Image 1 (spheres, helix red, strand yellow):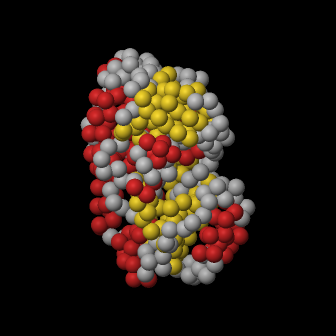
Image 2 (cartoon, rainbow, N blue to C red):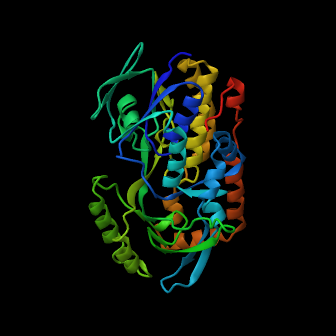
Length: 398
């Protein structure tokens, strides 16, 4: 097989999923991750429908995910006095199975750690492509050459920046920020069926605060011009949230007090990756949020896992000929990634006017919301999924 040595940037979801399949097909895989170790906890992520489940079954991890799934959480929207206004079903926000991002990453890492080299606490600083491969400079480690490089490093992808161009050329800010604080604590009780929980949400114009919600213990979402802050300065990020929500009523002041005690904290923009041309360039390819991410759009984790499955499978079918494989990957995923759409979770969950909040609450109880849920189910399965392992005779990794 040609082009057997590969480097993957990112060890969250898309990276380990891609590492699993590439190793299974005979590639020599290295994964570099900026964090010093796997990141535990994090917000809950979900999978929906036959397509997602088929890929997870072929990876041999579906049962592991079900064992560590979180409970389904319905979100009740309330007014200043805590009176119920509307309900958003946990079947919509949590898909068919939901799991903490950190738990999912750990499951995938354990499937690949013995077979792939992981470089934690490092990142790519430069990429130089030659006819025989890609020379990669690292922040800390020595320069190495790989046949192929994959960016599975999220919506703020370093690989995309180095190989394709600056972030502003490929990522559109959608006018909102979100913050998750405290990992979702609700896990399936091994002695019985999973519990159905209830979270509570409150809106002020352009702002949302959720406690005990589906994705984390606390979720904040707010409209804002683009902010200038360091993504490494957690304390500065906490102050941003505190200042934005200082005048919001209901239980928000208590939530902010509790937030100070959470180690698990993350603030980022709601943005969408839009690569109008190709997800690949030469020997470099983007997978997951770096290529087709739409923050909190509801399909990101499934897209990442399916995208990793497709690009690895196409490479195996093409016997390592990346030109053929990348062309097929672009054709398949350009169509399927349309499920990420042009949706804006901020605009839906944190309308900027009181009238908008009222209309959203009405919509949640309408037949149109039910139809939207059915459309999401169909879209998640709108792909002709090849059985790559059977087609190339791959052996399963235990």
